[in-house]
Every structure is written in structure tokens, then in C-alpha cells.
Length: 191
Image 1 (tube, helix red, strand yellow):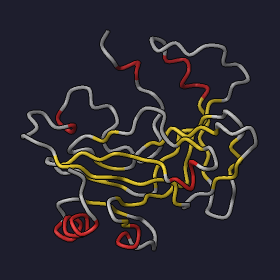
Image 2 (tube, helix red, strand yellow):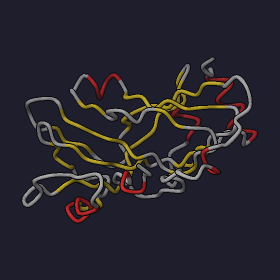
Image 3 (cartoon, one colour):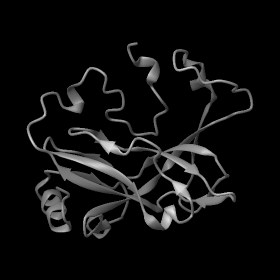
Image 4 (cartoon, one colour):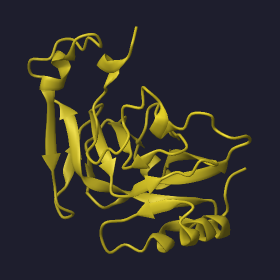
């Protein structure tokens, strides 16, 4: 069952769900009927393609081709057609053990033909900190993105049953406590 605005507010007030915003934005003002908006942070990463001919998940060389950038809220990042960037949310979240969260794009952003997540839309119980967005411009013209702009929303759903091993206790939970956008850590998988 998806949480309503009143339930989101109740959980935020009781600290059963934590959404921290490091700046002046009032999190309560970001709540919609069944979701909570989130914003782009100031730091993003992208692949420099000039010498990158292949990404091999078994070899960590691709990490050397990732460039990290930090912008302020008045500086536009121009996302070119079919360009892909990893961008951290401004908000830090902590999901309790009885919820999962979905990371969804806002319709106003999708109507510009911006995809904010290709696959990683699901957030496990007991995940903490920022979310790394997988942003792609599928339009045929460049689009300006700004830090702190509202880009997506979290929808929270209750779970049935108790989690046996939460995200923060799992052996392969590679992205716990991330602050910056994290590139793939698939190299840490056991094959």
C-alpha cells in the first residue's frame, strides 16, 4: 500500500521515516498526495568517452574514465542528447524496516524527455543517505539541468512481513551511506 500525504507527514514527524534536506527547503512543502519530491544535488559524474572504448564489469579500468563535477544552483549543466550522468539527490533518506521506496521521475521532467532512472528505481528497507540517479536525455536537443531543481519523487510502500536481512546488514550492500553519486561497483560482485 502506498503512503498518503498524511501518513508521510506522520512518519516524518515521528522519525519513522527520515528525509533530510541540507539546505533551506522545507521537506513538508515537497509532499504531494502520495509522494515526496526530491531535488538534484550539486555533484554529478559522467564518463569521459575520449579514450573509453569498452566497459568490462570484471575490470575496474572504467572507473578511471569517470569525471566528477560540482555546480552551484545558478549554473546549468547541459545534458546532450543520449548523454548519461550519475547525479546524487540533495535529500538524504533513511527507509525504516517496514517500508520500501520507489524513485520516480516527475511528469514535468519526463515531458522534456529526461529519464531520471533507467533501472534503479527501488530502495530497500534500511537504506540510508543520498540516491544516485541515472539520468539520460532521450530528446534530440540538449537540455539544461540545475542543482537543487525538483527532478523526481519518492513513493513509499508498506511491506508485508518482516525483513530477515535488511539492506544495511547484507554482505553485498555496496551503496550504503553514499553521499556522492556512485558509479557501478559491479566489480565487487561475486561471480
